[in-house]
Amino acid sequence: MKLEQPARAWWKEAAVYQIYPRSFCDSNGDGVGDLPGILQKLDYLQQLGVDVLWLNPVYRSPGVDNGYDISDYRAIDPVFGTMEDFDRLLEEVHRRGMRLVMDLVVNHTSDRHPWFIESRKSVDNPYRDYYIWKPGKDGHEPNNWGACFGGSAWKYDPQTDMYYLHLFSKKQPDLNWDNENVRREIQKIVRFWMDKGVKGFRFDVVNLISKGAFEDDTEGDGRKYYTDGPNIHKYLKELHDMTFGTDTQIVTVGEMSSTSIENCYQYAGRDTGELSMVFSFHHLKVDFMGNEKWVLVPADFQKLKDIIFEWQTKMTEHNAWNAVFWCNHDQPRVVSRFGDEGRYWKQSAKMLGTIIHCLRGTPYVYQGEEIGMTNTDFTDISQFRDVESLNHYRILQEKGLSASDAFRIIQIHSRDNGRTPMQWDGTKYAGFSSEDGKEPWIGVNENHTKINTADQLENEDSIFRYYQKLIAMRKELDVIAYGDIEPLAEGDSSVFAYRRCWKGQELIVTANFYGKEYEWK
Ligand code: TEU
Image (cartoon, rainbow, N blue to C red; front, side):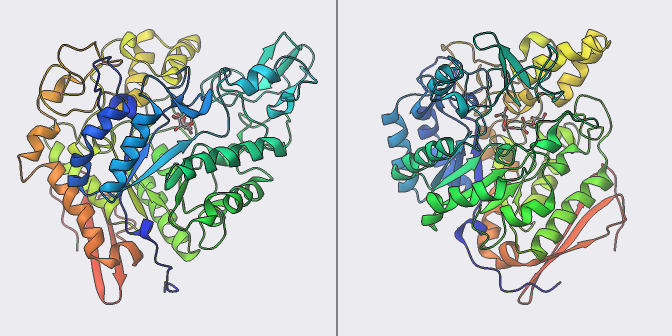
């Protein structure tokens, strides 16, 4: 497939590092990571070679969903520090030639946001239509849609005898994007952070903001009525034109939940006037049963290859741009999930990193991935914190599973696998927090004595050193950022291989997912 001359862009040559502030570095010993803690680690990140830092939400929030329930979009939650801490961090990020991306959660707010507090007061309140309210049907919810964190997607509110929609937790009411006042409010929020010098935004489940018909879903959980909805492209184009589209230095990435590739041609297409790139998640459902996450099935390697290659080749054909990644704060650790925690821990972590960093797209490194951090070693449900995991632990038992069977599923799939404190050294709290500080908000993995940045910075053969080289390579070889891609060994269920070509440069990547020698020509 021959590429038309792809437009050069700084974010096509960049690597992004995702920081989960709550678990990155705790500077004041309260057991929760914070902004001054990130400031302390900027030199480490510069040494790794990343260009952009994406912060998960640090806005004021009751913390029901670890900050994805925002109650004030223009304030820093005290647990992370002050706006002065933020301004200082931003200044120091820029001084190192890096950029900061903020995480904007605009599909929903916290139920403690002033807009929602007003909206629920009365049916004629000026903020009523900032959210989605419907009367019940025959004494039940307006329809049969399910919430991602379990139960119905509707919560009854006695104050006005109506139900409001929440696709996630009941404390995260969905905003009504069909209301122009809501769209204008979001534009003002984006401009507030642009005016502070933020050079990027990650939009949380942004392809869910346009809802279609509110009908019962006879075949599923309702997602077909709100995923990639009827006005989604109109709303993204409007947001682009009214805010970040005015500054070519700003990069935007949309988290596209259960999306279609056809829609992503537009979301992340060249000159379509929406976003720079998209996160899609189909490749991270190969250990699900369809869309059902809370089951134990072996990861389907052939499906993993097919999906990645489909998104690589088709998005290239449509001049659209992928974010490429294995890990984030919602996913288990890739070395545990698709690699090997044991004998081939180091080799498999490096193999997995190679696959992502040589693909066409912008690579994302999730905190701790660069040192091969693993899933949690938790042995009891009381150690888990994630609202989604705790809800499903209960739901699995309501479905008849034993507590131990339910626990085993949570252990494998919980988002907490990616949320344990960053492992900086072998001390009591892994250097995440001072030894005389409070117990961290979530348990430190015992293997931090073996897996930590201090050790790996000293070791030329470490995973950290290898990630450094992968990130540097993207800057040295244009074929990585701009080359086309040709899958190789597509039918071979033991090898993950592909070829990149660009103006005479050729890069062939071959990866062995299994712990045994394999001959492939
Ligand atoms: O994630 C949305 C999302 O798709 C994931 O929560 C996914 O549905 C789930 O992990 C599958 O089991 C975004 C944020 O990344 C996540 O942390 C938030 O909890 C969620 O939106 C709600 O804001």
